[in-house]
Amino acid sequence: MIDKLVIVESPAKATTINKFIGGKSKVVASMGHIRDLPKSKLGINIEKNFEPEYINIRGKASLINSLKKDAKEAKKVYLATDPDREGEAIAWHLAYILGIDPESVCRITFNEITKEAVKNGIENPRKIDLNLTDAQQARRVLDRIVGYKISPVLWKKVKRGLSAGRVQSVAVKLICDREEEIEAFVPEEYWNINLKVSDKKTKTKFDCKFIGENGKKIELHSKEEVDKILSNLENAKYKVVDVKNGERKRSPAPPFTTSTLQQDASRKLNFAIKKTMSIAQNLYEGIKLRDYGITGLITYMRTDSTRISEEARRAAKNQIIKIYGQEYYENRYYKTKSEAQDAHEAIRPAHIELLPEMIKDSLTTDQYKLYKLIYNRFMASQMASAIYDTTTVSIDGNNYNFKANGQTIRFKGYMILYVENEEKEEFEKIPELIVGEEVKKERIDSKQSFTEPPSRYTEASLVKTLEEKGIGRPSTYAPTITTILTRRYIEKVQKQLVPTDLGKVVNKLLIENYGDIINVEFTAKMEEEFDKIAERK
Image (cartoon, rainbow, N blue to C red; front, side, top):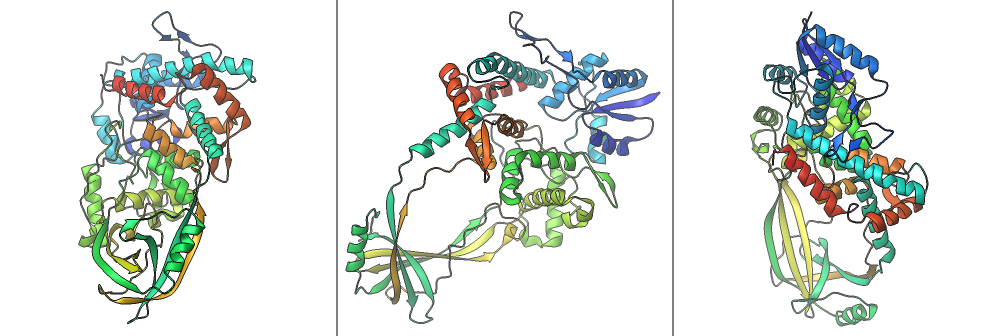
């Protein structure tokens, strides 16, 4: 007889959880979904209130029989699929197949796979959340209708085997729209005048930028304008007219959500989004560590919340004070966006005491890089701001105005550990100057430039845009980008996403015929409605 049967989605997760519950319990994996809509037909009865016609997934018969056998022998069955809408729906399908009443307390979730979280999950089972499963079903049904009703038009007009999708086609549209903007772009000429001066006491040289004349800002668009100013400055004397000293604070970024993790791993580690999610999944489900056995290293990696638990907050505080000192710690709370599904915490290390260096030899190079990125970002999010001393100097010559900005870092704060966007080294140290003193001109020169077209999307910037526009959710960014690359609607050229000829043809056809569906507003509005279903609204 099995005491407790716990069904999770993946074998790796099953192995990790098994370590925590042992005894007469058994942990098995459903290997993801076990029921879905049939591939061979629409599978939705539109006349009968859009009723989905689910079937058992082909090739899973022996797995289903094995699950049924285990469930029969178990005193209690717990459905412990992933803690999101997709996981809730898988639990609901499992309940149907195993004859479990979804109204019974059979559902358990854990945001991290640690002994405490698993124990806590088993001690606090709940009913399956039918609002979450309804939201997932609504998405699945709508995506099926859009895909299966529109794709055949592409087969007829373009070629067989193509597909359209409610989210993927909007992503292609964004990339095609950006390409059109780039093609239509007309560069405009502009000029800068740079003045290098030195102070007479210390002989320190620093750069000043041309701002305008007599306190009025001037933009320079031609060589004639520039030459006129340069000739008027030929014998000019340069005087300091204003000095402002100040302080600038720079605060850390919040801990990672799915999209910010994908963006940062792309920018800093050069990881494709699919790769980031695959490694994060491994870290969440558990890695075999030399001194600890199989250990889940991060919290659930599909989330749009920046909330963190009080336990994690306390652990971070102790660690920061111990390693860096009290002055580096700051208790911070981050506001989660109103439309975020705040069921989960942000992505953070599950065991704050496991420093990346301590477990480096148990991880692959890529696992270590991603774990370190998540670890440092989380710790930095609970640290003090960086503090800069800033100086702004205004210098005049023959009524023309120049400005110099300088800053030096006084206290590194969180930047000792992690910086989201590296500061460009455009700030130099400016010597101490007094209003009224003269500075010596070292040289003056001009530079012609042209405005640049908008840049193409990268995987990271596309995810950022999809999130900002409310298209898709944390679980859909990676599969959406993978699909449009696999279908060859877009290709990657040196990290940039470029529409192919096929992508342009498909996009044009879809916009002309289904512009009311393949658009940002419709897609974002549907996401909002799915959220409302999930929230019982």
